[in-house]
Length: 220
Image (tube, rainbow, N blue to C red; front, side):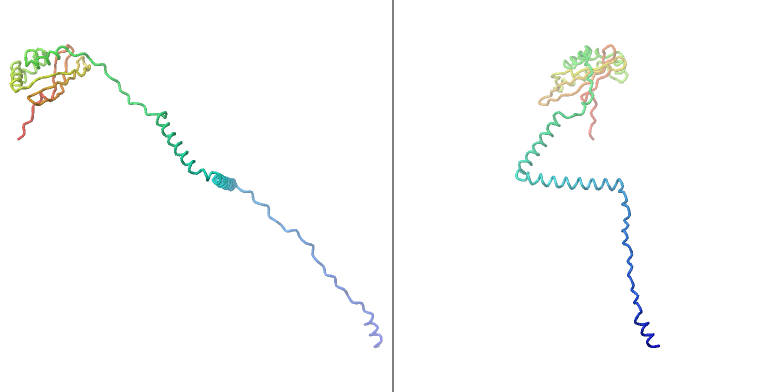
């Protein structure tokens, strides 16, 4: 019995266990997501900016010894460009101005001025139109009143030295307007006054406007 057990134990074959390894697996990478247009544009701008900065740095290194000369040249070119623009650049259109053809002096107005210089009321009164004469009479003025005013001016030492004709223009309705300046002198005083004569279609005076003929307000 014991021999049989020993024989059985001595003849037993040991069981060998073989280690099994799993096959290596290839790692999985997710496919790259395509960049959008904005991302590509931003990358391109960044790349161009870097190249521009790099190029400027390289150019700056080369031109550094000539920096002062370049600054002077740039300033001169700017001044020349600005002056060229002022000379040959576009300019604002001039204001539209149309000059009216001037009329020759009216004979009646010339007669009035001559009568004023000579203190002759007859010449001044005859230069008025009939309507203006009637308006003067309605206001209490007459040829005699006009002569009294002229005599008073002469007695006061007033002199009509010179008259200058500026020009005349046509008015609606056939009338005309004439512009004069008359030099007056009194003792050591001298002045130039504007006179504006309005005439009818026949050239007769219908109105005389001048600071000399306007009533002066008396101060209280």
